[in-house]
Image (cartoon, rainbow, N blue to C red):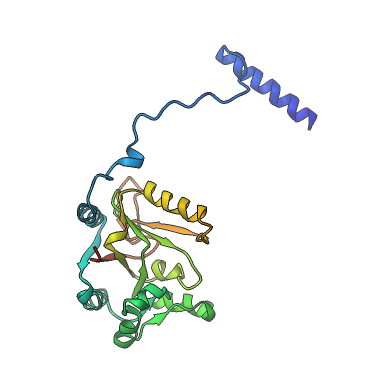
Length: 234
């Protein structure tokens, strides 16, 4: 340990000598940020404007966006499922989907499989076979056109990862300007002592990569298609 400390000191002394200054024992004071855009950009928008920009940006990432009124929500979802191949369909066990009548409607129309943590590996096998997976998004992010998912036992990650198409149900009132506002929400949850999700996923459309020569290719590691159904609740 003593030798390591001596080597470290000698190494830092040599670096400082090469830079022509004393060895710094304390970090330098941070420079003030150039602007506050990471926290404030898009925060001047109304909820209608945020929703419009969110859907416009998401469309550039090959996400199909449908703005749906409550009375048309089920019909819009059925149409999307048909468009993307229909059965088999898997749906998250999220209670909010059940409360909207989506879970029951999909079971009746498509014999959809509902994710159930008690079924273990069988859930994953069903997700692998599914044409369409449906999940409930916690929030949308206008800056990127992406959505946010919180993990939970009844909301298996495979529902939005393994099927050929992912469809996300999102309330218009939960569309945020930027990821900074999502971080604030998580901070408030922590301060209030709420249980935090073990995993938070930010999803910005179908699977894609631009690793090779910066040419973007869709449908590489996950869903080939993605769609958002934005529920007009405000």
